[in-house]
Image (cartoon, rainbow, N blue to C red; front, side):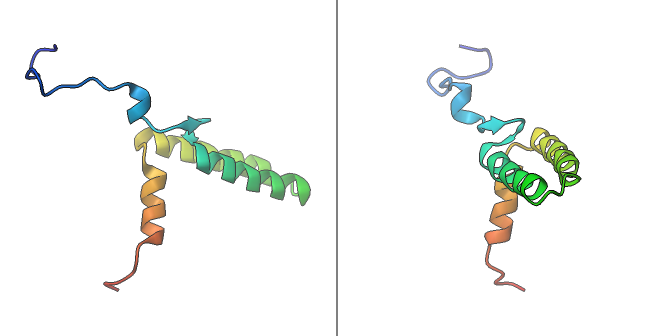
Length: 86
């Protein structure tokens, strides 16, 4: 066992059970949904200027994910929470 950790109270976990599933540095569900919408707008509607904008937004979201792994879950919970006190 490691020093500083009492025997019987420390169980090693595999990192895949703790870390979120990322795709291109962003939460997998967000990445698939965001890029599906970005390609639909950029290619199908022939608004090609939207693809570089989507890339910049993706880089911003990637930095937010580096800072906090559950950033998107917190945002979704905030949006879905009931506004009972306002």
